[in-house]
Length: 128
Image (cartoon, rainbow, N blue to C red; front, side, top):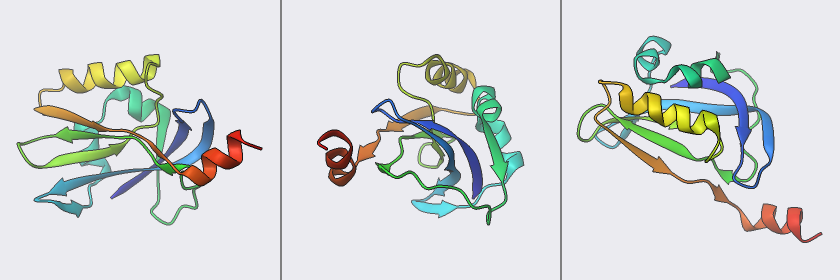
């Protein structure tokens, strides 16, 4: 599994700096580590230019709201590269990520899982 760090823009409009962003393959339903070289074939340039790969033991902040949004970049009918997606929907970087992803001939389809925000965070942030 490759660990990247980057600034994550939440759906609530909050930016989190130096958040851990994971990239790994899912093969036959099982998580599988990838290398930087493998990732480079599938990750769009906009992702690589806004993130930095770090050692596995590098101390980064986890996403405090719940679960980050992520993309599934399918390289065959069942196996895919799971990519934590730091760009806010509707942003230019978000649009560029998907434009470049669909242009990559190694990727046959793309999935997207949305952000999940815990009730605890929402209540503390917006009701106090």
